[in-house]
Image 1 (spheres, rainbow, N blue to C red):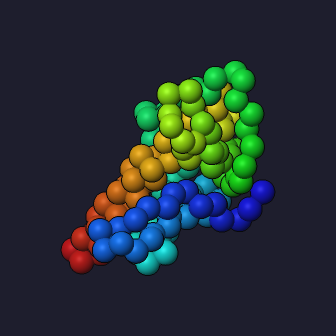
Image 2 (cartoon, rainbow, N blue to C red):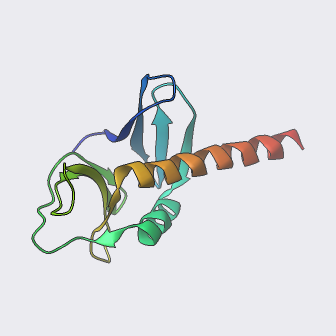
Length: 130
């Protein structure tokens, strides 16, 4: 178990690498980039994202790899090579106390989580200006 979990790595338009991280903060998940916005999402919001985009794991898949405890949940980064993929992909696995684990391609789930943190930060900024 780690206090920070790497969610995704990507290459930006200028050719530099960017990584997105998650850290557990009570009933929230803090999302941060190496060089960019940081924000918190409630575990309920993260659960909704993973329920919307995630799919149940096949029975034969072993849950391994780095993970982050988040309240009663666990977020895990899993590298897995499906039959239809030429290379292994990174997945985020959301382990729920009341349901089966859900997996989503890490790049997609991370993009959604990053988008939500940016939108929430914009909303809070507008509210504080009012």
